[in-house]
Figure 1 (cartoon, rainbow, N blue to C red):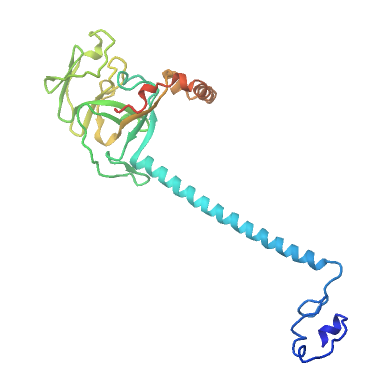
Figure 2: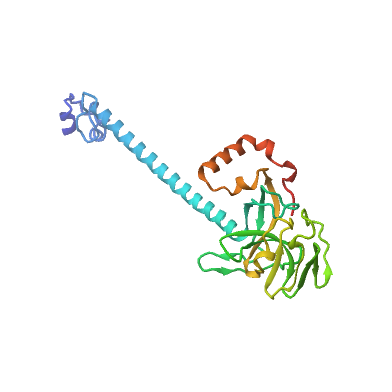
Length: 279
């Protein structure tokens, strides 16, 4: 009867009902192992501390699991966005007036790249080109003299075509081309309104801006290799009326001022009628 003696309890008479159960049932004031329950309540504090520590451990484990899950989701989302930008399409803004008449300064375009053989990063391999380029198409391409720059122009002649401009009229293979999209502001004696004749080399393109009097294009810097084409604009998703100088200004202070002005004049300067316009 050691446990009972350690707890200073009077020995109960042994009866048939209690014999064999004394060691299994701890007396009041004792733990199951027979040790004395502290009278100052310290055992309650110890139990509370253990429960709090277990709770904190579980909470920390939950936070770590949520962080790992959030990190995985961010990685997957970043991979999807990057893959879309590289292989499917991307957004861009038009800062100059060379395509004015069709595309305005401040038009924000979504560009299709998937059909034009997008390039795989690092290895510089290109996927197969799925769409043929035709005369009259608007294309996005890398500037032949500096491939870090991206230009937007209209294809006026393909490889093997004979091209000539006479008095502002475009001739391809000796046939005049109807160009309802072309804009002419200067008089016909402008040197750019008479050009050629020339034959476009195979694998090259001759491109011009629709704003024929204000466009740096193949008339100035030559042909565009087919391999430089990276896509075509699909539609205008937003158009904001601001001059070329504001879009091209790279000064950090001026950029911040410009973005602040956009926030202030968003509704008044947005060209709402151009939103969703197909090109």
